[in-house]
Length: 381
Image (tube, rainbow, N blue to C red; front, side, top):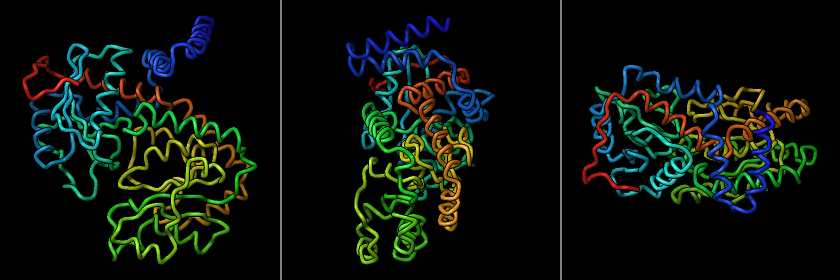
C-alpha cells in the first residue's frame, strides 16, 4: 500500500509540470479530502457542532438567518443541491462571498457533498466590537459558520478564513516564506522582535489609543530599539497626526523583511490576525503569540512552548520573553521548527480546503430535513 501511494505521489509531482498550477492543486486537493481529518481537526469540528446533537432544522436556519440579516450583518445562506452551489443574498460584501463560492465549487470538483443548507458570517470574527454582541442568538438556533470568534461565543462553527482560501493569495505567501526560510537560516536572523501592522486592534479614539497593544509594542520599539523593531504601517486619519508626531508610523514591511528576525509577535486586530499567524508559524522564526480570547479553527492544536511562546495581551512581558528567548536560543529554534512542521502538515492551501470539506460533511449528518427547494431568492454561483 505504501509503495502504491508513493508511486502515485511521484506521478502527481511529474504531472504537475505538465498539467499546470490549477490542475496540480486540484489533484492535491483530491488526495487530501479523501484522507481522514487529523485528530485535532476532528476534535475541533465535533466540539463546534456539539450543541446540535439534536439536529439542525430548516426552521432554525430560517429564524437564525432572518435575525442576522435583519441587523444588516454581512452573512450568506448557502445551499448545495445535487452538486451545485446556490446562495442568498446575491449582493456580495467586498468579494468575501465570492471567495466562498469559489471554494465550494473547487471542493465539489474533487469530491461530492450531500445536499446542504448553512449560514456563513463573513465578518472578521463573531462578534466584533461594533455590532450587537448576540446578534445571531435565537430561540430555534442554527449554527453559524465563521472564521474567527470569541472563545466563549456559542453556536458558532469555525471554518478557514477568506485569505488562506483565495487561490493565489495564500499560495504566494507560502512560496515567499519558504524561499526566504531556505535563504535566511536561524543563525543569521537577528535576535530581536519585529512587528508591523495597522491600527486595527479595535476602535481607536484620541482617549484610548495609548492603551492599545499595537501602540504599546510600537512604544517599546522607541524605548528599547535593541530589543524591539515595531511600528504602524497604516493608521486611521483621525489618529494619524498623533502617531506620526510620536514617530510610530514606519511604513510597510514585506513578509521577507520579517524573516530576518528571530522573534515575530502576533497581535489581534479587529479579530484574529489572518493570515499573519499562519505565515509566522511557517516562517521558522519564534512566534510570540499574544494571549487572547479570540480563536480560529486551528488554535486548539497549538501548544505554548511547543509551537509558540505566549506573551501578555498588553505586551507587559514582551521584553522579559525576549530576554528569555536569547538565553534559550536552541529551545526557541526548536519551537520555530515545530511550528513550521505543523504549518506544513496542516495549514497549506489544500489542508485548508479539506478542513472546510470535513466541517460540511459532519454538518450534513446533523440536518433533520430533506427539503432543498430553490425559489427566486436563491442565486446559482
